Length: 93
Image (tube, rainbow, N blue to C red; front, side):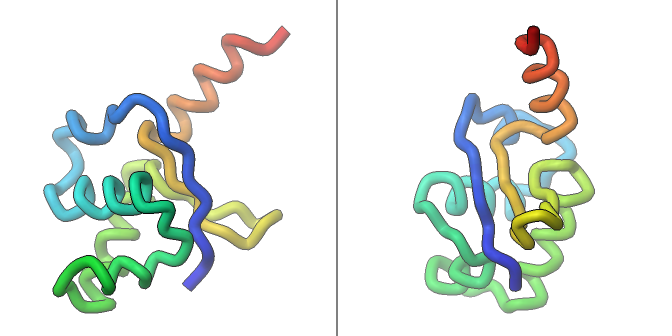
């Protein structure tokens, strides 16, 4: 499983009605416990590897996790990355 890099900002994901409770809990653990490997989540819960992979897929579909081919890592964020990029573009000169 790829390594995760994450950013913590306003917890927009907690109010996202498109995310399951499992996905919100997963992302909370990643963002608050500095988890760098998605399977480290197994140390915090009783979910199987398949459940964890399904949760990662849900977060990728909803754009809270994405793969960065340059670093070969999954990147997690508390807001969808397309929204983050839009926000960053507004601050560019």
